[in-house]
Figure 1 (cartoon, rainbow, N blue to C red):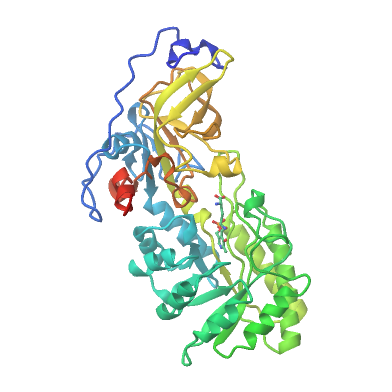
Figure 2: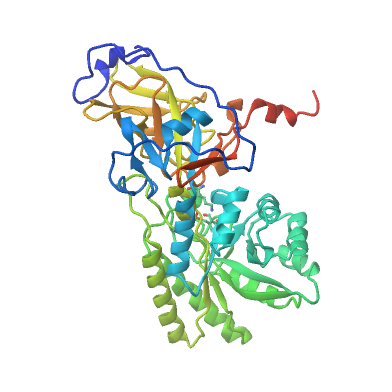
Length: 488
Ligand SMILES: Cc1ncc(COP(=O)(O)O)c(C=O)c1O
Ligand SMILES: N[C@@H](CCCC[NH3+])C(=O)O
């Protein structure tokens, strides 16, 4: 076993690795000094592009992605290698136009619906600004998300608050800020919320229900089924009871039902099955209480491509299928068609970011395996370790055309054998320390679930647009951790 490319003949590679030992590793630069927070930085000069038009790389890369000279990859007109040198690695590069374009696509596809971006996918003040400017609402599920959004100026009436365990403070805060809608998830919160109601402004609420539809990429995110903590089951009558109790509270205005099936769903048929059950419940509520609820929230869960071969859920197809199906079912049951609400998170944020890592070590083992160890890992992207999620990866910053390739596991730097970011990646066989690797579809549930493991620190986020890069979030340092230490 060696730790350089010199012994790469043991790589399960095609064809054989060049016999010459790798050049000395390129120096690994430390983080560059940060420009003042909140102000656009000087433009990063776009490298001369030799590649085809925008979108040339196709999904899962942002549509602005295009190859530049000498192996550079441009996102939003900014070279990733250049950004890595300037801001350090690991680095998350967020394409503002991709976020805005995806938000707009939802509004176009669902012009009569209300679209809420699910903040849990990734939230910072700039993201809240873009979402607000594109006319979407915001789905939050904690006081933290709520405070960040409103501090950034997001209009509270366009916010919807979720949570299976809302604290009394969260309920009070939501009322004080006059949050537009609140999704009820347990019987005990109904009287607590009603007690906070203000006479002139009843709180609009939806009741979260469980239709018994299994959907989502992993059991941990399947929330449309029995036997998990969210919502009220339709089967068995839990949902009907919750509706009864909300309707009995004069301070609460029940506007509709909410259902979130799960996450990373690519089959639109599942939403139609969901609608069948929701419309039956709406009809039951009409029959029992004489009220027709005006809103139906189908949650989020729209799947994206992590690799070129993956399926994705097309918002336009989703929109066409669900609106037609809802109208047909409502007509059958003699119901007025409720307004749709949707809460996509991943589908707006994931494809907009690319994670950039620097290779710190390359290891070829006598049993024919090859590992590329990078400077990030499960602390910035826990998804592979949590769900076995698969990703694409490509080298950036040096020409690779015509280079022999080998199969590598791209591993993180954390002290767990399960800290593997990408399994079985095809990368240049002469991959060496100092090389840069880019991982697309990095914008959702990576930084929002990032941790302080091993005190490595969470990476910075740089927004790119029109050839300019600006730092949104600086790198977390050990000083941030030490600042929280108030005793010893
Ligand atoms: C209630 C609710 N709404 C919306 C979302 C957003 O889901 P996704 O990012 O898969 O669209 C989630 C998370 O899965 C959720 O729990
Ligand atoms: N964290 C999950 C998605 C959870 C969505 C929240 N309800 C993932 O990365 O796939």
